[in-house]
Image (cartoon, rainbow, N blue to C red):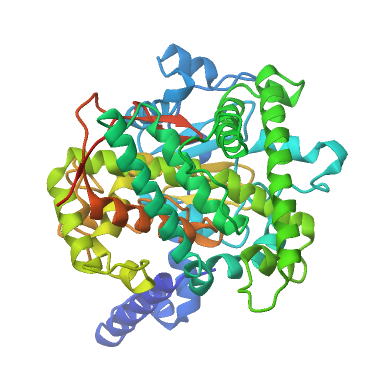
Length: 533
């Protein structure tokens, strides 16, 4: 299809040569013929004159060998890292080969990795009508082979692609992303967070700082919040004497284990495709145990809702989903299962990194506290939608935290049709891996990239414009994270309540990101909290 730019270019070309034909009697006949061409034909000619895209095989990348692909090249060049530092391999690849790199590995589809945000945008837009997510292969296999056919031959919204993905996505996105539905949980999320802030004050008094396992405390807060939405009830995660063998702690530990095992299976050798390796068996065991606990909680919620009836009760998310035409109960149960799976580590790690960055940048923290004081003031009741709407600097703080400590390495798509990226034609069947992690760390796109500067995200963009596809913590397009609004609401409430009460400090070793499907803090979160007067 001829794009608008090409049409405009062709029209200008025709006008130029028509003027020459009228003014110059010695103009060659061929030019007169060109002048008489229609805009559409001329646009085709302009398109044809463009440079023919280069083959994907001409993209720079580590040397590839038959059968074994580029794996030996990565080891020989020193690009082999422990699994928790696998993201550094992509850093080295970009340094050595540039913003577009070809990677051929026998256990994956052939792939190109890109760091230019315009290429990432082209990937997202070029696959908008059929966004095939690349990855979660081992988890998909486990669900397809589940005992008693629990998933009925489907893997769920998080994992599926194509028509099956769209069947579920098209039916759940309105209940999940409608602002009114999300804000209905705001008072309860605020109450959970206030309880957690009290817990933080108690831990500070008890230990003189946050304990080494404070990340686990954040997991408890995140699970209690997601439980409100997914299961419509408090799970009791924030009681002071929560036992290790309690159901909430089992769920938290299982989610951590699932992310760790999934990371090993996805980024390691895919021998599990041929026989059940130890890491695959562990992933299957943890998944089945998580499934058992989550299913038990979902059934308990269903029983409570049935006993309560619907009179004078605001309808819950679970009830909304169960009433959606075209969704089976098993569809809804699988979706709730994935909400619990995806809603713990993601928000809690982001808040951990954000508190660390605020502690390391006291001037930013003071500015955020000033905004919270200004917005909330002497208000004693629950936070409202009106309050959250005014937190412009807070939203900039979170965006900047996502840039410095991205949630994931990047966004992937499998191509169901050819795609042109820059000078190259990427053929159908290849995958494209947009490494937003590196884009966010690149001075070319983010001046002062090593600094924590939330102001860069404010409306007037003091450090220059930001490409809309440079930082994508929730993905983009039709496959954007369906829980985005809920996650943002939780994070805004958390920062508002923590900043309202405490000043956060950190005096220990620098914290970096380690990879476990999502980035995790490399050090214990030994924050020191000072009560604000």
